[in-house]
Amino acid sequence: MAASAAYRMFEDGTHEIVLPQNAAKIQALEEYLHSTQRKLRFFAEKDIPKEIAEVHVKDFMIRHAALLGLDDKDVQVLNWLKQEAIRRADDAGYIWKE
Image: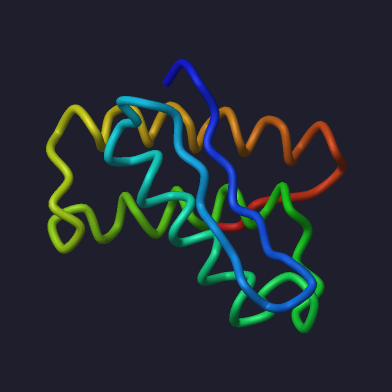
């Protein structure tokens, strides 16, 4: 995935998901799921670091690939991205438990 996507929440409670032109389906879904994590205060109330939240979303998407309409190629990419996210979490001192 070339360009990055982002989720932004504003002080007034509104939010937006910013996607690059021609964004991949998994980019859009990942940002949507991150926005859901934030709305549910997944980070604040459970004190989950961003590095682990990244792995968590990718793991969720892999486990629910059929429900999300993802094909084998999407799942392959997600598995690679998940391993990269686990490596970054490990580098930051966190441990991902399957």
